[in-house]
Length: 121
Image 1 (cartoon, rainbow, N blue to C red):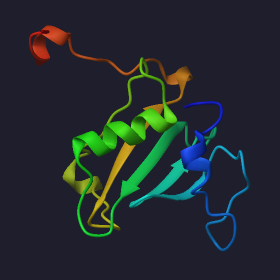
Image 2 (image 1 turned 60 degrees about the vertical axis):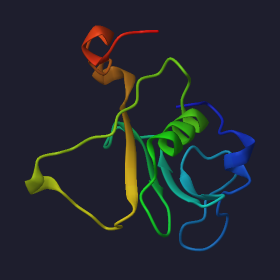
Image 3 (image 1 turned 180 degrees about the horizontal axis):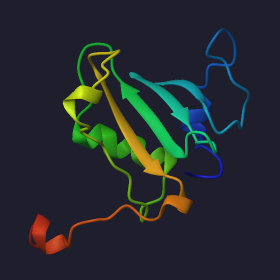
Image 4 (image 1 turned 90 degrees about the vertical axis):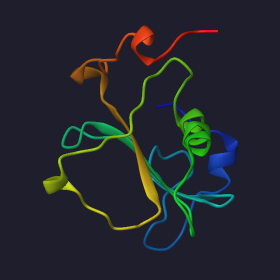
């Protein structure tokens, strides 16, 4: 996760109330345009970087999730959306998707070869 959040994100930080955080904290709730974001940079007890992305009336598109990913992680960082076993599903908001990245100590996210995804060019 980026050391500092981009200014577009910081401008949307909730500073007061039950979800308030301080400027430059690496966690918090944000309202950026139509997006509502919950961000956590992980801890020893929960060694995952995480951003939940929700919209009021629909789920985010791939392009929107890619945009949010670019606000918090670099171009060369792999981040994932996850489909856990159905027994572990928790759905607290019908229009919310999540981005996850394990802490570096957990190792890199294994990726399939690009040839398994498609042809370049």
